[in-house]
Image 1 (cartoon, one colour):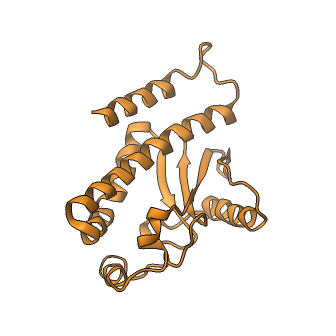
Image 2 (cartoon, rainbow, N blue to C red):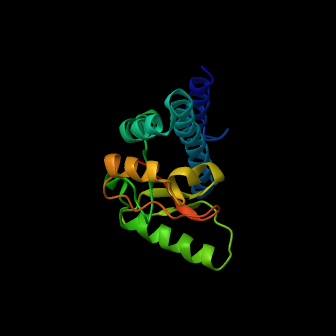
Length: 184
């Protein structure tokens, strides 16, 4: 129930841009909206994975991730009337491959991380003139089970669910990928 209330609140935020009907600036507007959408998306996906782990262990989490992750982001795309996805430079699921704009953003983030600069959301227009939002996804300790140095069990599950996986060998704090939003 709390999740649906959160989605409703974000929808209202989206519809009520400001008292005057216009955001203070388009960049600030899309930045705030992107932050809100990715927060709901992260909570939804991480909640589904935590629940799957608790209910059936790592194999169940892989099955849920494989079958439901794209559907969850697609459903949130419809709720918010945006194109929402997760992508990375080392992909696990080919359906999440980055487009040209996302590749550019990922390369910028990788360069910034190498230089020790903080990674913050990016809001800009792409080559088609559409507003885009990207937010870095950094590896957290709980991500390492499936994205770090993985166990033989996880290797077997990767071979089963993601035979072309590239998304292992990460360390805590490293750039794992990005949330990407394309606004209409």
